[in-house]
Length: 389
Image 1 (cartoon, one colour):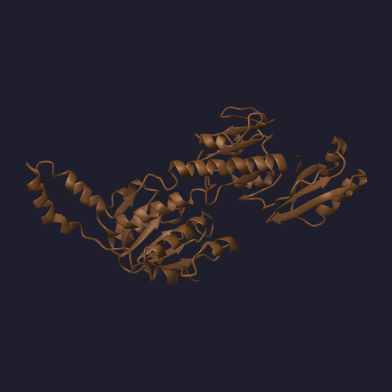
Image 2 (image 1 turned 180 degrees about the horizontal axis):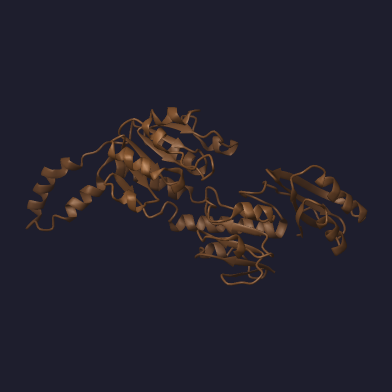
């Protein structure tokens, strides 16, 4: 029986992935094997010694102390792409709001309840509608910064709208490249991209290299009248620099899912209450994906979509499976296999992969290991944890 502790409200369909015959799921639980959460801020001290994995039903993991978890051999999962369509659709809405004064027009009509009859209202609206004229998206140029699951969908969508699309991502994966239309023009330099587009949409994680990426220097390189959209992370944008760019008319609009009180004071900011992934479908997709990844890890040791461990998958071929995490240093695998050989157990199948400072092994062996053998593996210098799956 595996024990799953939840934080936040998790989609029922996600929770239903855990069969009650094999999993116990609750928000209050002692000695859990895994944690499933959304945006709950998790402190390292909150993660007990029995936890083997943490799954975030969403893409960002800035609410999880990933570095501390890696040091303890705890796998941290996220769900890239599960909420991508929800964010893509909101980006489209944001570009339309920035191009045409839809919000101003709606407010104007709602304020005209003092008119005495429909005919008078119609004459007034006909006379005043030119105040809310805007521009079409077709033939405009969109710059997409970050071409992962969401960025690729946004780029392809903009092409379907008749826009030109420039894309920038120095670390684009092979999978992402396959998802991207060949009509997206890849740009190798961010400064070149921002100087050539009408809209810029950000789709990046928060890393040391992306924190404060949109700063005063970059904003000065944008064409006057550019609209900036941020549905990625607040920390990517220097808000003070954005406010100055708006006041100086260098930036026309800033549409963000991460409003602050300072931003709310500027009428050219269109703020949203962090709703990029807040659709029923996205929340369900994320929860189901996170649950499936936890199940496969707990039952088989397989790792998919981890932010701190390598992707590892090994089909079951019989025998007994060991899941071993160790420091990524030389001669570790040889020492592990030596202990197994000394126990007179044959290796049926195995896989070993590494990522940065951590390595992970799945080893299927013929004979059931006893506690003495497992303790010998744990005693090897550099071993982080050992699990009989």
